[in-house]
Length: 180
Image (cartoon, rainbow, N blue to C red; front, side, top):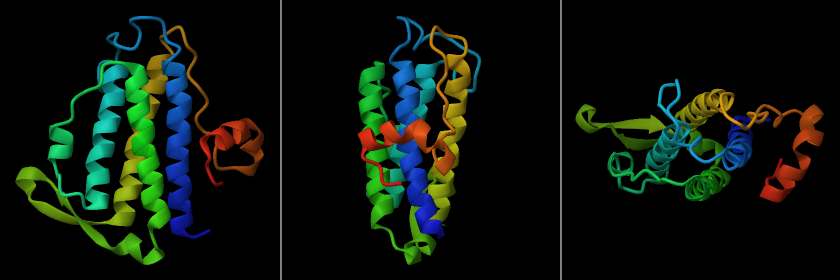
């Protein structure tokens, strides 16, 4: 497997993991989504909105959309978990489509990232993708921990890449239309 194949699999994992996490979130009792909790962001709602806002920012950089830091700065948090889930799925599918169009050479190509007062910083596409995946995994872990204090058990999120785990994800991967 080459790096591009790995990054494409990570984009698929991002969709799959978010799908599993949001299905748990959608099963929460009224008030649990917004409830104050101990974490970097003080609720499941705020954490998931942060993930989406950062995904929008980096998708704009990767797609060279020209919105820049405003993609994050102008983000309007989404109140309901269903609408937030739908927006996250759309962002995840954009990321998959972006990765599917890349060539190996594109991974070293630089795109400009708008760092506000720190100026415009060219970054490698491969590095940005690695950062996005790490960022999303990090914050999904926080939501996973917060779910432990709710009426819904946190879902298993690490059964994606190994053949051994295929039986644990096969139906979901098929439902999501992922190529593994």
